[in-house]
Length: 116
Image (cartoon, rainbow, N blue to C red; front, side):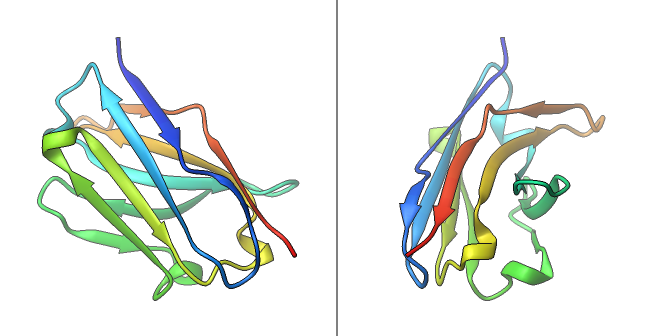
């Protein structure tokens, strides 16, 4: 059974930082392109960042220079380091695993709220 379990969300003030984690089981983690997506209230699901099996990264323009995606294959874990968070970053953040056949698996999401 494939499982993706996110953690690390919470409430943070503007300008603050959080690190999200996603632990993956049931699939060969090192073969997956891993990604983080988010969905803000009333908005569409959107890509935040991805990292390939060979550590090539891709970021949405709105997070470049603030967020970093990392993977630890030995721990079957992908991270999203988020700095200088702003209220517009408030959303539920979802972990995604995609294999070479473009089959997707998703986590249940972790909520990030940026507010003073």
